[in-house]
Length: 164
Image 1 (cartoon, one colour):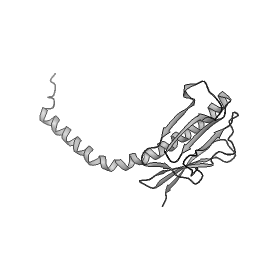
Image 2 (cartoon, helix red, strand yellow):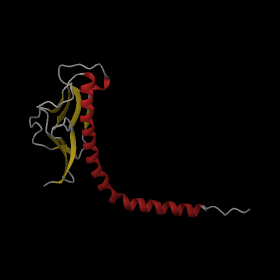
Image 3 (tube, one colour):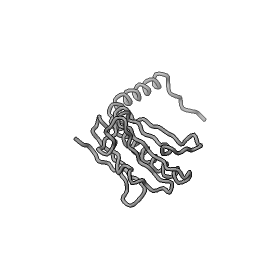
Image 4 (cartoon, helix red, strand yellow):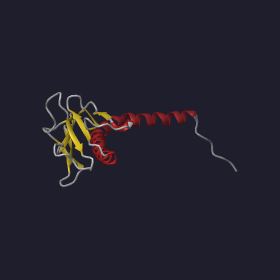
């Protein structure tokens, strides 16, 4: 039984050079794809946080609130002011990517104020909770909205597309 010869070092280098050229040419074309995914991933993370906040409020029997700070582009989860949870993961904070920002008239304009989505201990939404939150990609002018579902204590993602 005779085995075929393997690749020579020259052939291997030629294949690697060809692969490097293909990746070098296609990488710039793929960057808008990955930038667009960042907006959707951020919207999914915020939506997941609303579900987590609701479950935390129910399981601990403590009002939980998601706060949004438009000035610093931060958001997070915490027990409502005045309540204490004996767990480390009760308070979480997230930072939006550099090219993303909260974009909504319902978010507090006052730099010192934070807008909130508040879940009561029974899992229902507080009447003062935001109806919707919009996240805008400032480079592509694309907006995704996390909006309250009518007659349910939950939110959903709505893609608003490109805005002017």
